[in-house]
Length: 168
Image 1 (cartoon, rainbow, N blue to C red):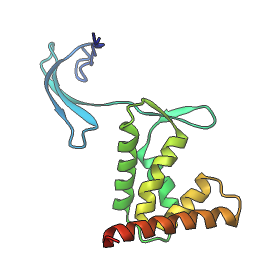
Image 2: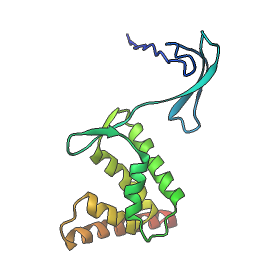
Image 3: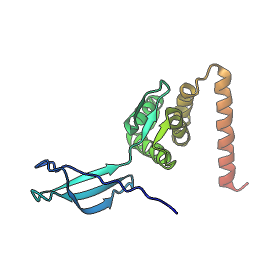
Image 4: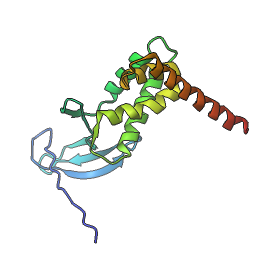
């Protein structure tokens, strides 16, 4: 037997501050990551909209926790892409892909390590030089050998992909 928890959410009216409101309409946002609800206050009758998203918390190495931020992902990747032919739109799409991948795990809390891992694959697809820069910091490369190993892995992946495309 499956049990479902039902949590009653009380949303204060932003106009008269009445401690409750009634949901008139609910819709999932275009990206599927949030729910838009149209509400009405039973006291003053005014309508307002709320947007609900599931909280996603990142646990940092130092032990602190903070809300997941696409902007923070974008900023970290932007540094790796400095001087590369990567647009802001591409960075935004990458950050969105990272968030989707993390949310797909279903976890409410993720380690910062998992966020970094989620960045690597889409960044490799976007720009290999930026990927190497990001990976060298993220994985703490200590020597030229670390770079050589990563470049060899990139070459092997590129060769496999080109063989798949040509059908060899």
